Structure formats: structure tokens, C-alpha cells
Length: 166
Image (tube, rainbow, N blue to C red):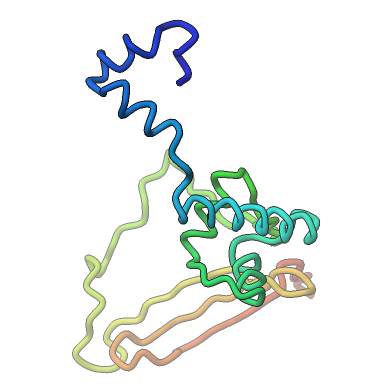
């Protein structure tokens, strides 16, 4: 016990309402089969993580474990990695594309979140996003007809596109 240097076991057991025999039985008990398996699994996870130059995250580590014959869930691998402080490397570069001016009110919701239409061309919705590619990001804008869910129009331009206006 962590406080054993400060307080005798007898006092701690009395405060926690645990018999001394139960405490000593617990302290000398061997780890459960699950705990022993987790210890082995953690060691395998550490090896795989180190061999990947600390780049593999839960999905790839789990795939390696499955190849080695381990039957493990995603959550178990993620939990054990988190307990050991192991993380994969995310090589994606995130680019902030918009920053709302908090001094300005948000745009009005003209359809009141009711995205339904009774006939074509009654309600169109639009969205814009950045799509990562090997050559950089591409700006993509799209307009959909709510009734048919068909693309009415779209446009995509590279982010480094500059219109010179001849």
C-alpha cells in the first residue's frame, strides 16, 4: 500500500473496513489470467510500436496482433496503448479553412433546418470544403437539389489558383 510507510496496515484495514487476512490474501494473490494476458499483450504492443518507429496507431498495431494470432478488440488495444502512453503518428496536415468572425452574427437559417421539398428546384442547399490531394488542397463547392438529391452545380479549384482577370 502506498501509505503503509505512514500508517500501519492494521490502521488502514480498520479505516477501510477490511480484515487484515483479506488484505494479505489480496496482496499475495497471483494476477488473474486476464491480467497476465494483458501484460503479454502490452509487451507485444510495445515491440510493434517500437518496430514501426513509434508511428503505428491502434488500427495497424491491432492488424499486426491479429496476424500474430491474437484475438483482440479495437477498444482493448486502444485502452492498453493509452495506459502505456503510446500513440501513433498522424501525418495528415490540417488546414484551417474558415474562421468565423465571432463579432458578427451567424448567417440566418432560412430553411429552419427543414431540408424537405415537395418538388424539384424548390430548395437547393450548398456546401464548400477543401479536399486534400498529393498536389495540395482543392476547393470544392457543390449545390444539391433537396428533392432529387442531385448535384445541380459544382466547382473545384486548387487552393493556389489565382485569377489574374485579363
